[in-house]
Image (cartoon, each protein chain N blue to C red):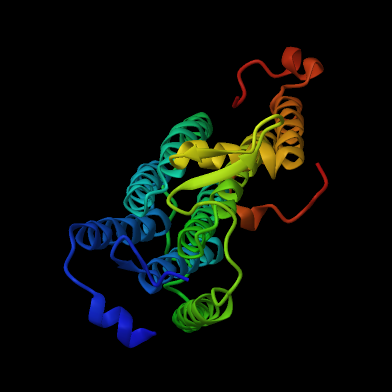
Length: 106
Length: 205
């Protein structure tokens, strides 16, 4: 295992990824706008990508970067379906506040 | 291991660039979740994605950096901003948690503790693997081709491509089917029902 990646200790990269993940979790917890919750989930996915690339470099193993590519494809699919759901919900409830979305019935 | 790291740590240009991009990433990520206006949040998120692409570039993962700019900062953010404009969001007041300072403090303590747990789990748990990695030595990935011995893929993009199409061919095809299904589902979900069109002429959307 290589403790330095181009002169950067992997502790720094993992710490940055942890900070990003925590910020994403905080955003999901405190915000009430469904689109901003969606953006916080994107932050979480990005921190996971950073961890994958870091370990891919530290272990000299290319598969981490390949998996990041798959994560990005999943994120794109999630964005398409999630935002379509937001539009469908907004058309019925006239609101994007998750506190007002307490029923699964349309 | 820690001593070795701190002794070898010099002020290299890549470390300075990492500090810069990391600071920008954290500040803009905080701005994403604390801005009242959702459009400002979206613009902050674009900056977060670009600075993460910069970090990937410093680490040498050029393919990932390119895909980060193309997919995240391009495609996904266009979709998000489009939906924001379509829904004509108002600025959200954050005063809900100012009324409950105890809840806010508990939440912050929870998130900070969560970060330290996550950081210790990341740094101690996984990386002590003694097994030698496949490929990626001197950025080369040797793979067999019928009729020859082995062929080396040189460079980051070729290496990732060889790994995708040789080791991960089945997941790749499954991802393509998943994307197709997701796009069809998005169209069906967001489509206005034909019977509603005549009744509601000037409602929202």
